[in-house]
Length: 278
Image (cartoon, rainbow, N blue to C red):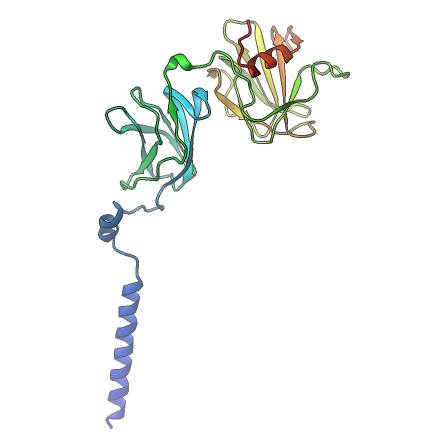
């Protein structure tokens, strides 16, 4: 009977139509994507949200040649290089460290101010960093800086009626903390009262600085040398703390090793006003 063949032909036509529709909705081939945008990103197109300086810094977005820069974003685990602006054109820099959410690289010697971007192993370029990264001469590096890099208030001072051995500087949790001057890290530990803390001694000085209540363990290691302004952690309220703040101590001599705590306020006030201390 002719009805059965007609049913088979209709089914075959419907199947062919479904196959054609599926093909039209399938992702473009690698060659088509390459022609449209320059390659295929196996883990997704890298996107940058910010670029900040972490060492040899004048400020968070003011670096110097040789400075380490941290670029954050998404799909960064396949980044092959970081590209900085240069006087004669783009300058490529090798990746020091990479993860899905961040990449680190050193600023090349001839880099100039601009908005760095990254390039993946597949040749896909990210967007330029939304905010400009200034590159300044090494002579601009600070000698001493205020340790809290953000809006802040002075809370309890030295003594404060209970043997308080430092000054509390209130700031939003997560505000960057930096080395007040160049020196070497001595301790990065946790204490029930101090919370996450870091102790460093200052170069060419008998002073030691203490940073307490960090939101998480310090980002630096014992024995590491720090430049003034280098990131060491973030404001928190770990340990015996009420409210987000930095408890900052200055010791003449070794911290709890024969030295004595002195009032940090004159140092903090001077650094806050951009003045140097002896």
